[in-house]
Length: 205
Image (cartoon, rainbow, N blue to C red; front, top):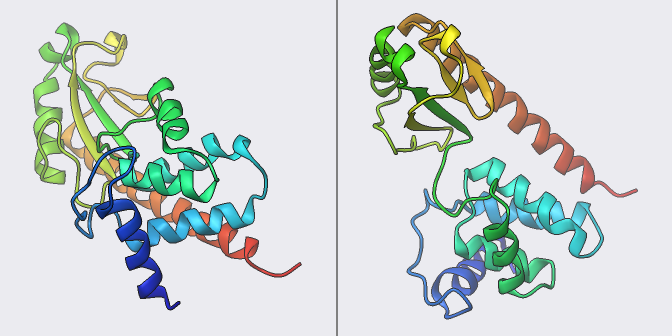
C-alpha cells in the first residue's frame, strides 16, 4: 500500500464511516493533515507497550495540532487496540485535553481592572492585528489561539497576559511582537527536535 492509499484508507476509517462518535464528514486538509496520521504511526512504533501509552500519545498529538478531534481519537484507539469510548473517556476526564481547536500557544489577555486601566485593550488589539485573528480564533497554522480573561492575578505586572501557563507582564505592542517571534522560533525548534527523535526511533537497532 503506497503512502497516499494508506492516508486515504485512514481518512475513510476515521472520517467517513460510522463509529462510536457517529458519522463524520471528510475533514479539510488543514484540519487534519496526513502528517498527523504518520506522527501517530511513528510514535506507536517507537513506544511499544500497552494502555499506558495513551496519555503520552494524546499529549503528543495535541501538542502538534492543538486539540483532539474525534477522528483522531478513533485512530489513536485503533492503533493502541483500545475502544474509542476508552480514549474519549480519558480525553473528557482530564482538563488539559480539549476537543475544541486551540493553538499550541494559548494567548490569554488579561482585561481585569488593573490591566484595563494600563491599556490592556491595546495589547489585545496588537495581537489581533499581528496574528489576524479575533477573540476565540486560532491562527491557520494552529500555533496561536486568543482569549480574553477577567483576571490572571498579576496586577503588579499590568498590562499582562498568559501564554499557556506562563505570565508575561508590562506588555507593549513592541513586546508583543518580540514575544510572538520568540514563540514561533521555539515552535520550529521543538518540531525539528520531535521529528529527529521520531526518525531515530525508526532506525534499526
